[in-house]
Image (tube, rainbow over all chains, first blue to last red; front, side, top):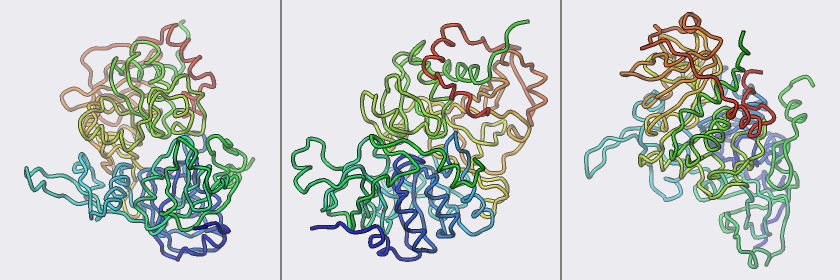
Length: 252
Length: 241
């Protein structure tokens, strides 16, 4: 099946209010081209899921596309400071911050990935996060009676992942750190893939390292050179610090 | 008068010395200081320590560190094995993670950590980045080592606004001193060269206690030489800029 289309067509399949997963980690291989197209098409009320997000979530908050964020950490890392648009949107009550431990995002995605309603988690019982958030609860081990925290499954309607290579069927191969991308693909109902390069149909058949994202989980594939810019993409390009500062509204 | 020790050097060295040989050690995002500390430990007193990180690169060899991340490909491409974040958390859950390096913005005397909000959780005065792995790692890792480059009464407070995490905080390293946990309370283990106990007490919002007045041994020539080699761009000082 040929799943190649334009970015505009792929993002047009996204509805307002959708629960969406975002691949990558902070400024590393985040699906920035998709983020810009979501903004251009004016989606509203999106509910975002990521372990550790940065510029992707910050820009979507700046443009008023977001109603909630489920994440363990939202910030640029050391060099660029805090995600100010996200922060202000939460402080003004426009965006709901559903704070997780990064592991509880992973556990919630794992639950969705294996089709169970929740996942038990250790340690979280003694955090205030457990008390104030309704996506955490306490459960009892039916075998030993031990009490544990539980996190409700999160099944994104679609996840946006950016990869270095994909074929027309949507098989996508990530070079370097995979982060939660493979898990997001399995926990979500479908994946929209953007790729630096589109390879031939038989390319991966001859490769020892197979794609982590199988095409049958993917609904759309888009050829997007520099699709993670101004963030970095391993083996392709580093960050564009000037563009990041400009988007953050810093004077250059 | 003796030469002043740079705070980034002192903190990196102090954090590094808390790692014991053979331990499994994890750091996350926005963590240049502990990242440099782990690399330093593996080059000096703890060559068998196991460096774990978010991209999943086990024991990266001479990584070319970058300012904008401590969770990127630079720790993965030169690594000796792949062990991604989910695996690191699972390891901690089953009791196999020795040291987790974490931070936050407020800490109380009992080692409770706030990295979430100032004010109300739902309508915060300040929304902070969040605790990342803290809420599950601080209670499940054998030792949670905290670093914070700010040491004032708002940071080390009588009471934290929100308890993002608590549990096994064993040490907190600041530009002024090294706090260590003793009988469930933070005490001053040592004061860094160039600073005094009075200065620590003045900048700490809870009562400062100690068993004995002790100065943190300054970085050795060997440690400083390794720091310059591991981190030639001085990213260990990035939080001081």
